[in-house]
Length: 343
Image (cartoon, rainbow, N blue to C red; front, side):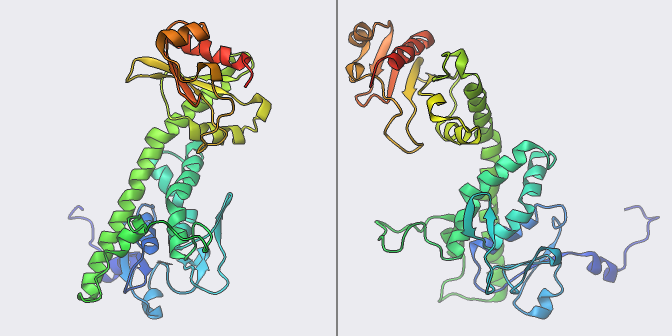
């Protein structure tokens, strides 16, 4: 600041400071993440934090999360504990929101756009906004609201206490340690950084690895008739993780079952070979839409090449879900032959 510019009166600076409010005492993953997310927005990037349950203190805050018994975006109040609260994320998600989900629902698009250094109308923003909710935020909402992943009459085979909600919880002082407010507040900041950093790592991954793979799969799906006239074979000139994207894109594009691809061909760069893989009936299924022919299964090398009538064969798995050839054209020939052979 130039010496010619008047300095601000301390009271004026205090008035201009924005405050994020949340409850004091034992903290949880949802408000730890909510606070972190708010500090990624333009409005609250420089906001200070107040942790209290005193309504008078909370009334001095610009925005309040996870406390106060009010959900009202116009008042910047985002609690989820009050009777009658049923807010969900929408877009096919029906898990009741915690403060993390509430903040993400209202501010998530802006956070993603700012991270990508783009505008809100960039189509990547909505894709990533939904993906991050599905893969990261929803579980935090469910855990904080006591919503089980599966029916309560099913006994878990093991305990899971290494998820991010559990790791945040372990940062609270133990029962026989000091619960001095300054200590707890310091631990809260550690918790907020822990879960917030993980969120940003996920966002970076989905923006820089997952999304480019989706674009490759979308292009290959669109151009699949170039590999086979009926569009039954997808050909990748370079490897990309494809299963999840393929099923999502088929649904988004409303590709009817008779028009869906049966085989995917891609290079195995570590082995210097090409793979032909049968598309499963679902992303997690071991059953294929059409497995490679039974007569080829379990065969290798020259024996397989003789039976299939294709040079350069390497193997066909015993279940018929995948096979290999030394060349791109050889893998494509196997896939085309397999389409003509009945199950």
